[in-house]
Image (tube, rainbow, N blue to C red):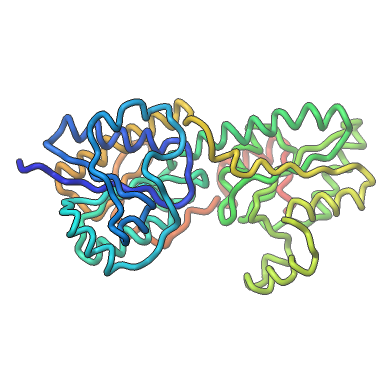
Length: 346
C-alpha cells in the first residue's frame, strides 16, 4: 500500500477533546498504514491560503489530556476553488476535518467537488445531526454543572435568584444537561419558548415554601413566547430596543421587578470551552479518531464519524450537512427534568 498523505484541520469554536481526537486519528493511522500527516493551520482559511506543516509522529505525543487544538483554527470561509487547488498542491490523499455544523457543511461541499473528506463531530453544543453525542459536549456539561453547583452556595447564603447563562444559541442540550445535573429550578431552552409569568410563579412558589433562593439556567438562545413567532431580524430589533445585554439579564430584571427578590446574572461564557477534556471525552475522541483512521485505510470517504445507538459508525456528509439536532420537546430528558420539579416556562 502506498503512503497516504492526510491533511487534518480543526474549524469553528474550540472545545476539549480536539487534541485527543487528532491523536486518535494519528496513532491509529500509524498502526494501520504507512501515512504522513499535514497539519493545516487556521482551519479552512489555511486550506485557502496553503498554510500547513508536515507533522512528525512525535508531534502527536501528549495530546490526550491537552485542551484546545494544536492545529490553529478559525471560522469557516467558503472559497471552494482555492481549497480544491491547495488540496492538490499539498498532494493530499484525504482531508480530515474536525468541527461542528458549519465545518461539516463546508466538508460536504468539498466532498461534492470530488475531494476525499472525512469528518469528526466536535462541538460543546451536541447539535450535529445523526450522532448521539459529539466530543467536547460532556466536558462542557461537567464545567457548566460545576458552575451551577458553586452558584447554589452563594445563592443560598444571600437569598438570591441566580440566573446562569449557558452556551447554546440554537440548541439547548448543554443547558438541559447542566440544569438537570446541577439541580436548577428553571431551565430555559431555545426549543421551548417560555412564558415569563410561569417562571416568576415558580420562583414565588419556592419562596412560599421557605426556599429563599432559586437557580435558573438559561440557554443564550432562549426566547419568550412573543419572540418565538418573530423573524430573526425583528427579534434582534426588539432586543436592541430593550437594551439588555442578553436574554438572561432580561429574565433577571423581570423576576426582580415582579418578586422584589434580588436577581443576579452569571455568564461563565468561554470558560465552558476551556481546559482539559473529561475522561469521557478522551475516550470518545479516541474512539472517533481511530474509526476515522479505519475509514482512511478503507478509502471510505465522504463520511463523518458518529455515535449511533451507542456504537461508533458513520454517516454520509451529505446526510448531515446543513442539519441541526435540536432537543426534542417530548424527549425523555425533558420529561425527567419536569418529573423532578424543573420548570421550562411552558
